[in-house]
Image (tube, rainbow, N blue to C red):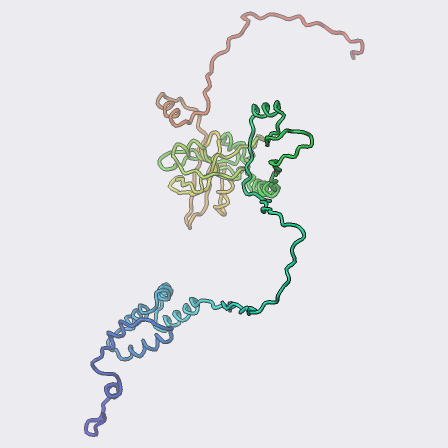
Length: 404
């Protein structure tokens, strides 16, 4: 290896000469072996074998070595390590060892059972026992089935009962019936009623009802734009709706006819009552977990209950106002201002509009969308009597009246 006339000029040449003399054969390809290397035992043994081959390979980037190491791991460890996206081989080795300890099966000390049976030593010469004949003969009795799985019960019609009664026969056998008669086919029947404990169920229902005690203001019920309410127009898809912001209502409510007309997915609502400002209570027809409403170029996603309200199509109550955080509501200017996703939003309400005359196509559209609540016809009431007449009222005098 060493030559006096031609010494080594660098450490790399010296290391290479040691590999040639003491290393494996030069006809072996460590790069191909490295790329085909897979984990067959533990991670520590796989890492030692990987480093011994990687140190003999030149011209391979660290990223390629990292991918080669991860691809050689077992499939379950490989998935866990890839999910952590290690940046170096040392990081990948540490993760592989950590997940290897996690994936090891828990060995428990289970009791061992032996299959060997005890050897019974039979006595070749049993003792001679004197057999004494029994005093009474053994009766040939068959074991009676005390408990029958499916006892057959014979049902007798009323006509057959009448025939047997006339002949004086027993209902269940063909023997003559008397007060001392013992029927061999008699059956004992037990009627058992299972009592269910409904107290716990009633308590849970009452608790749910207490938790879902919602209320609806009288303005929201009738659609009136009173003090503390703001009304504006929104859109569900392409359909315009009237929205009423009312802080006196506890939750959000939608007209059921709009949900049915738009064919929305209606989820069942829990059984509870909504207290109305006039003292009555209403039950919701269902709920929509997420309703998308567009209001003045602003999108709102809210959960709503379906409730037959009048006037407005959608009620935004205290539940929606609580999601806004700090907000400013000017009921005189009919506006509400708030921040939504770091964006300042202003919703301008609409003023109360006077009734307008509807045309035929308007009435037809309202009828098709089931948007007409009631019809009223206004006409002049004619007086019953055309002439005025005087009535003579009787004067009742009381002696206890005094004049001053």
